[in-house]
Amino acid sequence: MRASGTWAYGVVLRRIQSDPGTAPAVGARCLDAMCGWVAAPGADADLVGDECLAHTELNPSHRRFAREYSDVALVTCLEPT
Ligand SMILES: [Zn+2]
Image (cartoon, rainbow, N blue to C red; front, side, top):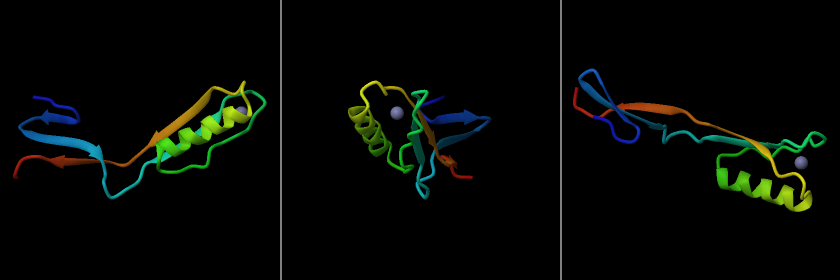
């Protein structure tokens, strides 16, 4: 029995998801060989993406970025114990 983010392990149904009490860490850096541009790190992937778009607007040949996303995952039990 498995739904998105849910896994039945043994006899207890559990779910893993981003911990709602934490914020993800999102970052990006330009992969152009001669450029050291790095987006301001934040918790909003859309804002970091907007920074990448703005960087390409100013530097049209800089179109590739290494993006990073990390968060704290929380496993919760879906059944009474
Ligand atoms: Zn660049």
